[in-house]
Length: 477
Image (tube, rainbow, N blue to C red; front, top):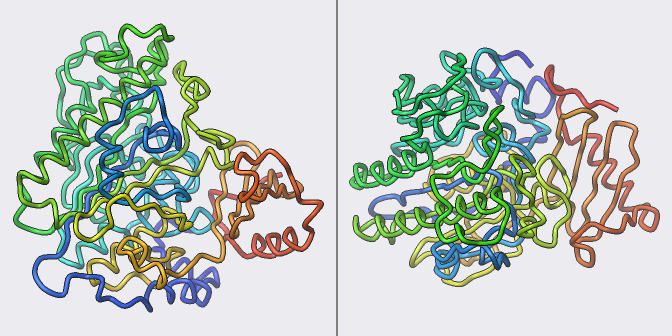
């Protein structure tokens, strides 16, 4: 695909127009009474943690790491058990979120670096989630990590539908929690950190640590809410916790202090991992309090999730905390532990408190969902289905996915499909399909492909048509 093509033209040129139309017809046919008929449209706050595992929160079974504010958010809202990230690593997961497409159709399907700073940028004219909400009259902001276009590219947040941006443009830059600068819109904002071994991307080893980037972004988010309380807004808060610092010479789980875990008889990286998550939890509590103080609480939908499964980087050990719960796999895997993530949705008076949903959903559902809730037409080409009926307690009206699809490009290709209670994984173009029955084998321990050839055939037929070609992301054996 040429970089200048937008999603609409690309899918049509790839022969996907009719297929995309049939998928999006599900979202478009929903009764749009879900949007506010009178008065102001709801604010939307989408919080995306970085490498937070399915089992890293108390409300998902975590016993050692304390997350009281997020757990309370779950008691006040809806907890999803079968929600999936866009991918198993950062950039493609975010691209799926922003475009409403799975990784068989997204422009970005992996972490592809662009020198001197940034990743493969979204093309100009891409139909994105913030652009869709701007059409509905929303002020849009992204605070945190981007990863879909470096400085001066077509993919920067301000060129892709966000009115305001503060944070990291480059994922590699975001590996450093004490950088020399962050970005505000397209301008570099110097910080009070001295970094040795300065490189064009601003990364390196911090020798003077004053400004912890996560704290700055959390404060910026609260400020944005307070300053925009008079108009409908969409805040996408893509924080960097609990990602590891992967910079040479300073690998680890970098956090200003270990807090309540300082005296634990744990390895240092595990103290850091827990402290990061509890720091995030603290700020989710501050965010909820700010919504109450500004009078926005009952008119704000807040969603909390993660971009992929837990990692084994910077000394982190997902087994120490059972960060993937009972799931198999971690970040970079397409088993459940790499892609199934927490999702909590809170909207007082609209979402039933203490609700739980087993509805099968994924990142590409958010674009049609938000379009549905704000009474704006969703783009024709989307792999998503609005989950507004589930959120609003109208599960009988909720449409279902035929299947969910992922592909991942690191060495040999990986593909995965969830089709009802069946989960399939394939390694390489010539690999045999692995098949798991998630009803009885959530941990994907027993490959039952030989026992269900009819299911294998059905999934292989789906795989044959699940993706469109890409000049950057070809399947490899």
